[in-house]
Image 1 (cartoon, rainbow, N blue to C red):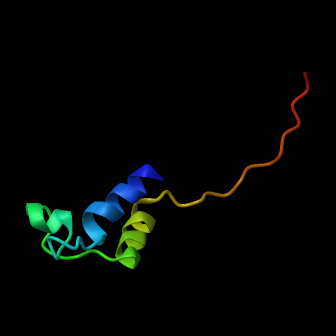
Image 2: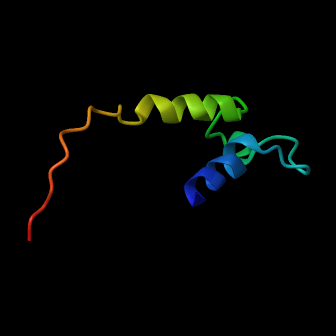
Image 3: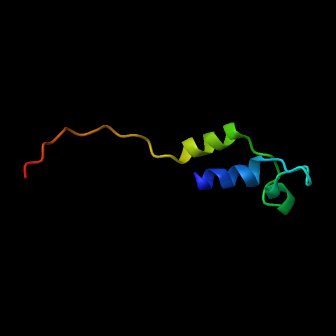
Length: 60
């Protein structure tokens, strides 16, 4: 959650005094990101769910 908030604060939020995001002000990013774009990037790198194996009962 902290990482998601940090990305929002630095790349998506427009700061009132700068009139741009912090990443744009420092030269890290040329464009303002959106939450949809961030979601797309997260989905692209997330591991795909695999098929679950059979249920095995553990006997102690």
